[in-house]
Length: 274
Length: 261
Image 1 (cartoon, rainbow over the protein chains, first blue to last red):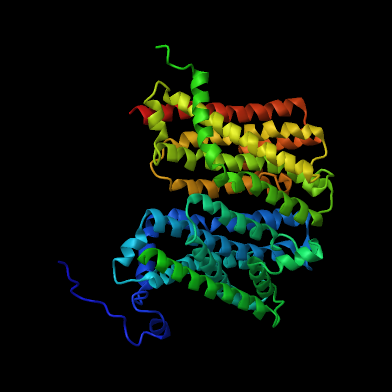
Image 2 (image 1 turned 45 degrees about the vertical axis):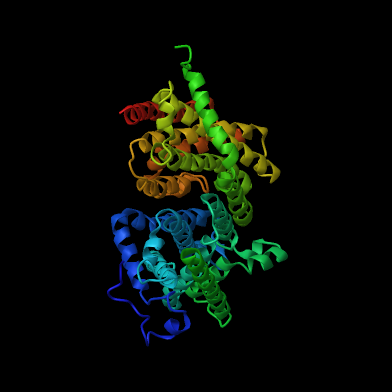
């Protein structure tokens, strides 16, 4: 007979979340999962660092190579136009792949979460911890990319100071939705569906050319897609063309976060504790 | 000894093995091999291209026409990337199918030949579908563009053969990410596919010339636009063929070492 020597009670006074979430789902320790992710990634630092170069290569190639073919878009120089979009896209890509491929692998094959649940931690700790790690990693990439934009003179306004927190919001929104989607996946084949969602968003959300290229109905459709809102918001901040309407983009991203986290933690809880 | 297959037959048996698997699982790669290049052609060629004035930089063509043959080559090289890294690695390490095959009279070299032949067929089907879509989108103006397909497959194999040889030496898949980001992405972006090479600083040109992608793009574009002279064409083909040959020779050595030890 084994007995737990030191039963961990849900902490009292741990904030609203602890009181709302049923006991057993959340132990208030998502930082333990972040620490684990850090320890694992310290071994594979090369693959972490290399993630920074992909958007940089895109910026150099598209900004400066394309920039000779098309000198300006929406009234600004082409590199100024495309850089914030690449920033948003890289935040999305990083978050989605971390939240789907890595989560699925740990969930299904490495059985990391089964092990985690054998400790006092619950499914909500897992969801929050994974999301936090995604954010830390994505935040580092975004900060690096913003530094490069600054060095190339692609930042036109002090509003750009808000670009980093917005990048984190974008990453969180896509990570939350991606994580929720990953819990519905059965095999690796389903990941082609992730590609099928992410790639058109990357290519058609007004990333590389202004939406005025599209006919009216298509513009309306794209106007409802998530990456478009992220791009518009970041573009407004780095070019300084900020208005109250940009709060609508923030609201859109916040809704993604709330819905994604709610679905993901509920599904993880059901799948893991069943 | 009557049951020992000849070299060609053994390679075909290996291809049949891949085909049997692929027939049931092709959906898993349909988006990456067929849809991705088409979406790129739509976004970059049609969408972005609508902003580009046809001019000297695009050889006087509309941008989508300028882009299509180069994108055909990129499609082949990108498909070759996955097929030559994770797919091959899996056959060594995770599924160990190669180990199963060499327990039969098929030799490690024949396994390699079959694998390369299979990759070439995958590239051929991917580029052929892409060409058909490009024609449907009006991105192809000359029937000679058909020659861009063999050029793309050759360029893809020039990348694939050395990478397969490299994969055969790997015990862990960790370095494939770096290969993707530091070899494939720069080859995609800086070798003249999306804009002419002379828009980049001169010191970058020799790096681009060294890549199989640049030679493939020169061949494909030259064939499609009828601007290719016989001598440069022979030079590009020879350069790409040399990659295939060297990659295959190295691959035979590594396959033999890994599968007979």
